[in-house]
Length: 97
Length: 409
Image (cartoon, rainbow over all chains, first blue to last red; front, top):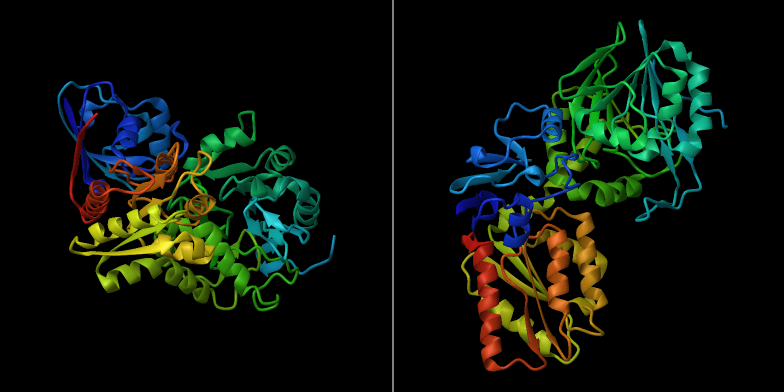
């Protein structure tokens, strides 16, 4: 199991590999904000404080959207594009405005 | 086309269009005084920049004004502060007429551009700090996202101290006299615009104001309504005041507000509401209150929703649905920031009992935190069910106060 801690909502969810962050947010009742859900609008950008390596690699579309934000912050991801790929570990996420 | 004074400063002219007859904007906004789609031409020693265009059906007016002030081959840049159709309606035609011009959009607008112009067109993206030069004029860009589209940016013309603010500081108010000191009283339209367009994005408003504060602003040139040249700081202060209000009240009272909204046919949902409130109110740091939706108007709903850290909505089920005032309440969230608010739903029912789950589902789409499952009671609640209501209220209040929620999916 992978432990996902959504810091701003104080929600800790234990999940199996393959789950998407969208599904985790929906099922846990988190307030994580999604906009277009297809990686265009950057509404769901979040900072992965721990465990970015447990998620899928950044795809081209996500990279384009993140670059467009013009910020130097590290470990930013679009939650609508993220899936858990590891079997075990801890992921800590903070929403980013 | 009426003849108007279009000069904003020695190097800036208005080339927008007027829409005096529009009475509803974007479906939700009433526009008793019509509106305008503001666009500007900036002239420098080495060319011209066009700042935004207009709604498509007003392209004729826009191009006539533009042609009276510059030649197409002088246009060096076309700047779109966001790509909403009321400002990008003449973009494709303008790019056709001025093919040498560089289109400048924000990074977030890239995919939106493809949605508006169906062919690939050249463009450059701008983030905070990027500058473009017209020789003796310099325009600097500021990233001001979500005001009110994700791709919104602003820009500042250094030499003239003019802020091109996009929709920020706009008003739906038609008056060809253009300037705040010459038009009629548009104060209601300025506030109405803020409340309907900017209020859901207060945090982003405050971030933008912080960026704007780096510059001395002599004139604000928004995309709708009067150009603000008399005392721009007055309008900045208003935005700051309105965007800080709820935060100010929370900080002052130092408690978290939990509001129970309900409607009741036979007093059963009301009884549940009372006990839920009692349970919530036992938690230190929470002030719980309850409101009968039958007696709340929209204005009160919006203010209460904004103030509340947690919102619990109760409705009986009538014909397989929640009652209309409950839906009306949640539709008010369109005017507010929702992120981080805790939500929950409950209700008594006679036959089918769908209302609590429907309200819960709606709140999910409105980006509430919904860590507690909805509860429903068949007709008159028993003592045990009322105990459940008490625990439900308590649980929602504890989570609102920061209790961690743990689960397995």
